[in-house]
Length: 170
Image (cartoon, rainbow, N blue to C red; front, side, top):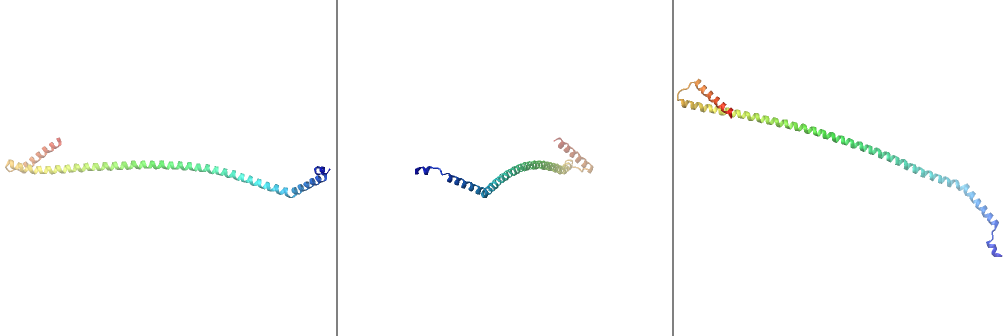
């Protein structure tokens, strides 16, 4: 029967093991359960805090990104406005410069025309004087007589008139 003792169930031993287990459970519960639970609660709150901080950081990042995009759009709009203004100023300045250059060129042309007309009149006067001198010499030689000052002046005036009429016809 000895073989049955090995397989048999000892009730006192089971009861002592259960009592031992219960006592161990009560000791663990009394001294460790609250600490472990507090530690788990602390870890849970730390993790939740990290999640909350991450969510807040994400919201701040989104708000910052939105503000950045708005500032970027405003800066682009301002730069476009500045460029349009600069282009307008440059076009007005270009028109002013062109108008001034055209006015100066017109002035130079008018001055050149006036100088050319003056030079032409001077040349005509010089030619008339020379013609008067030559005509008076020729008149004296042709007539071979003494011509009075009045006759002399009359011949010169008539000759000049005829030359003036010929020039105006050309």
